[in-house]
Image (cartoon, rainbow, N blue to C red; front, side):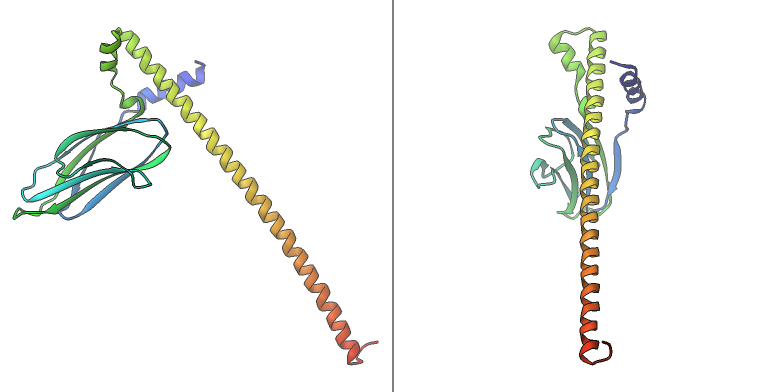
Length: 206
């Protein structure tokens, strides 16, 4: 691990901790949260909704193609987990409906989503492989370093794709400009020749 990767690891360790998300969901409404996640990444989520008599909440986790990764008809409190098969935009949707004679107050929704090394349970890994605390921490640093390197590789690929797109667009614009100039020159030449024949026919010029 070079100094750049080590610095990135320290940066992520210091600043890569996120609090869970909390919001209010009115009755008979729907709220969706979207996030882009890389390929082959473990995603976990803990959710909890406050009690509301007469209301029923549903939870659905889908990808951009509409594939259902997790669904719960009467969502109150629980967990979900899945592993991404490709880089995609994933959506977590909560929806409430009145089904009885209860009140129509807002429901408080708490969602704690983690992915990558944040979602990996190193306690279970330590028990399964009988690792010492220092070995667990080294394993976590190794996974974090690999995650950072993968992110860098992905950004390089995206930069290459954007550069190729820009070059292709520039070439197309240049060829279109040349074609437009040729059309304008051809039209101007035809106009001059046509007017010359016309004036000669009218004997306005010799």
